[in-house]
Amino acid sequence: MDIYLKQAILQVVDRDLGEPVYSQQGLDLTNGNTRDYLTNKIKKLSSAQSKTGVLRHDAELATFLQAVTSDFVGASQQLVEKWYAVYQKSDDAPSADAFVVLYEQDAQAYLAFLKIDYHQAFTHYVNAEEGPLMNQLIIHQSILSNKTQKVDEGFTINLQTYSFELVEKKYLFSGEKMVYMSTHVIESEPAPSLEENVKVVKKTAEKIGKKFEVAKHDVVANVKEAIYETLETSGEIDTNQMAAKIFKGNISAQSEFKAEMTASVPAEVAPISPVVREIAEKKYSKQKLKLSNGIELSVPIDVYQNPDLFAFINHPDGTMSVEIKNVEEIISRL
Image (cartoon, rainbow, N blue to C red; front, side):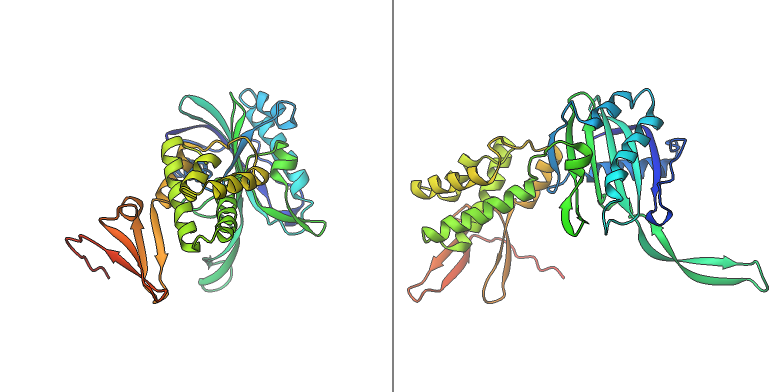
């Protein structure tokens, strides 16, 4: 995806200082390093952990978005102020830098809020103030993560449709761990992330599989296969499709699985962005098996499904063998 940065600003949120230090000017986007850093951070917001939804038009954040193109500095400060009013109440939320970025993607305007926590790192310091020059080793307390790492928290909002993608963490508020970004900043309930959906699918499938005496390794393998195939064909996690693929031919198990899933997840299917879909398809495109004798296998889905290439053989004594067929070449790698 091509991202074109329009405006960006950095606000310093060092909790030891009290209130944030608000910049009165935007970042210099002619600087290639700055552009590269922000672009990569925005891209990293799309992942299997991202939640999606649509911003309520009566949410306070919607009023900031209406002014963001005409008064970017002012609107971005209002956004950070709203976020920090909640964030500062946490007992354990760390100091961070907050970036607000206005950008275009696929001819659509977006706003991104990126929170990047501080980390300690060692660096050198040349002390030439008194006496002979001395090179010293010091700890820097406010180092940001590099561009290849995900943001700690943040969201992107489409300024036309108000659809958003969100990554949030739980922090301690009055002794209780809870999320706060969706409930108090965006003020709009997101759909579960793909990762959350997959956890529910796996847990439910294992429960139903145990009841109907389906081997656990078969259930897990079927879940992975079903996720891959439904994402590839429809681009979403569909309960009906999943049930049919996980419990092939077992109508009773399929019915119970669908009933459990209906009670556990929203009735409305969560949209999955093309980026997340691509990540997920890559992740679930292989069956990863660990055998009791220590052998580990990574088998592509199309090979796993082909009995002419791969098969499990059950023996009368209760053990089983794995047969890998029609191999033309073996390559050994260090």
